[in-house]
Length: 298
Ligand SMILES: [Zn+2]
Image 1 (cartoon, rainbow, N blue to C red):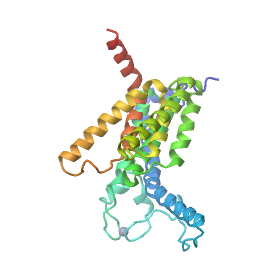
Image 2: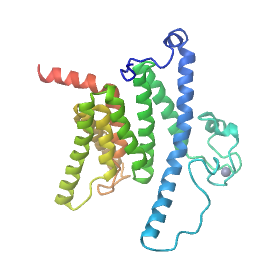
Image 3: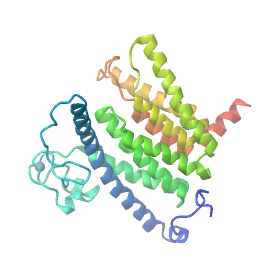
Image 4: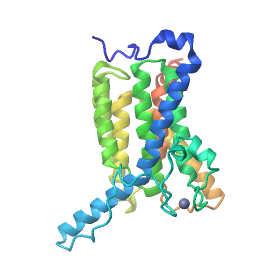
């Protein structure tokens, strides 16, 4: 069985050819539903992790455990307004449309619902459509979408909290190696070297920068995120990822400094730029590298 060849069709191709509108609608609905899960995850995961760290620290310092707070996890409590805590009605919870029908405000207290929820759902929907348009109804598209979903969650968590949780980066690093066992996006050899090389490279840069300036230029989570990129893309595309991410980061940072919304010394998370660059490279990395190498060799 060539389960990982990437040419394996996971959706009936005749239904795609004969009725593309319905097929893409199903893809979009699946994307929106997963996007809805992600917007909840982006909000809840940092809180869950902080409570865990708080408990761990108190335990290590032999302090009294925190006062028993109400249960809070991925599934509990049910979706509610963060302002007035009124539970959401089923129809308000429909991805994308719930937000639009409510006009971006809570049904009860009219407090604005953060636009981030809508943005995450919309981006995830677009990611699902883009993956199927680019790779066709194949395992490659499914993998690209899954990676895209993880990168969207990491982007928004890093922007909000300046953390890249291990519970997302590490499983997706291993998953990258797993999907490339059959060479879905890169050879296994290239993926293993990519994961190790990427981590090592940023580790060296981090320590060199710290020795030279006494400052920490990035977070340790960035090493793991870059390693994840290496595992999915293979080592050959890593320079391209760094180039994309640095260019985007420099442009964005420059624009913020020019509009005086950021000073030179304010830390800016690098994770979102790495995430975008990894996903772009999964789609266009190989053709771009071929183009570049052809140009370089005349
Ligand atoms: Zn409310």
